[in-house]
Length: 341
Image (cartoon, rainbow, N blue to C red):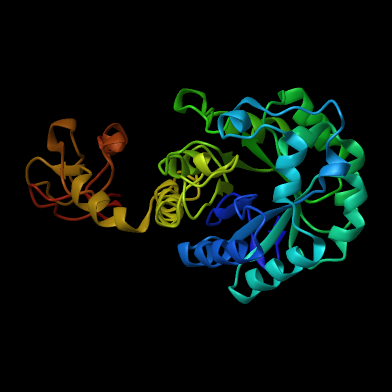
């Protein structure tokens, strides 16, 4: 898939999204600082959230455990405090583009899709809980921009169903664990391969662990997209700061993702350029065990195998025995095709 002019998928450098989310704490100024920090750290994109508390929360809404642990007491009040208007988000999109990074948005309500579509987003995203929200997925996909879908707390069958709904759209799916922060023994990075096999789409990892090393592990497991929360301080009050990386950690995250990409390569087994010299020097060839005069039928006792690998390979020993020497062959020298009749 493509976001802007950037190719994303197997063989391409991992696409790293700095998830600002609500770590701006409702402040445009802090949002601008986070965008600047993301660009400086090497992110390819920043991701924001577009929601309105009254559209998202019913009277029955409750806080998740991690939100209560972060000091929140009222789900509606929490979201209301963290809302940004369409106008405020437009300022942040402009700043992202000024800094040379893409701007992506998670849209949480169907009623907000037209407003989001009027802004200059490079791609849309849906949060994990919305993998079952077909009307929202369809409405965002219909906007004609790439769509990224997180898959936390969902089954493989639910992912496959959503992929089927959007079979004609340019969509990527991110393996994700809906736990903030995610314990290391529940990171489930290996499920990236399960996703890729099941849906044949671009896949990635939305990372809620607190580790930077997860970037390299996820790329090694096949992630083409990485998403990681960014904060200015993990000690800040708010629901997502504790599961985020600070700017220096995020820069290391990007570095490790890119290093892993170089280490993994393109996934094809073949002879690589740096190997040719060692291949020639260290492989063994069929070598004359003694002087073999021209016209002589070669006996198995005339042959042995030694380095380098510049002659005929040892698997041809039985084929060469019984052939006639086309020229004098010096003892302890590799035998070549032109030495034989």
